[in-house]
Amino acid sequence: MTRQELRIYRRHLPHWRLPYATYHVTWSLQRHQADLSAPERSLVVSAMKCFEADRYDLYAYCVMNDHAHGLVAPKPEFDLEDIVRSWKSYSTNRMQRNFGRKGAVWLEEYFDRIVRSRLDYETKVKYILENPLKRWPGIVSYRWCGLGRAGTKEIGFVS
Image (cartoon, rainbow, N blue to C red; front, side):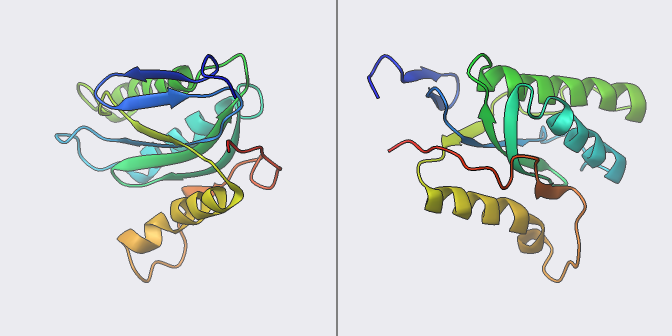
C-alpha cells in the first residue's frame, strides 16, 4: 500500500478510504425522530440490499429501532460515502412519503471503520448480528439482521 492509495478526509468525523477495503458502517436517527417502525426497518434493509453485488458486497447488516449497521465492501468504481448517502437519502424520502416523517430522518454524519483482519471481520459480523440481543436480552428472533449475499464470500484485508 502506498500513501497515495489511502485517502483521508474529515467532516465531523474522520473518514479513511482505501481501495478494496471492507468497512463497518453505523448511522443513527436524528434525536428528535421517533423510533423506526417495523415497515420502516424493512425499508432500510431493502435499501441496503438494492444494489448489493452491483455496487458493493454486503456481508452483514442490522437495522435497529434507532440506528443501522452494515459491513460493506464497495466495488472499485463506487465510493462508500455515495453508497451510504444513497441508503440514507432513499430511506428518508420513502419514510417521509409513506410514513409521514418530517424533516431530516438520519444524522448527517456516520461512523465507519476499515476492517483490518479476519478476526476483525468475524468480530464485526458477531457484533452486528448480536446487536438486537444486547439491546433486548431474551429476544428470540429479529428479522432486520442478517448476512448479505456476500456473507460467506472470502474477502481481503488491509495489513
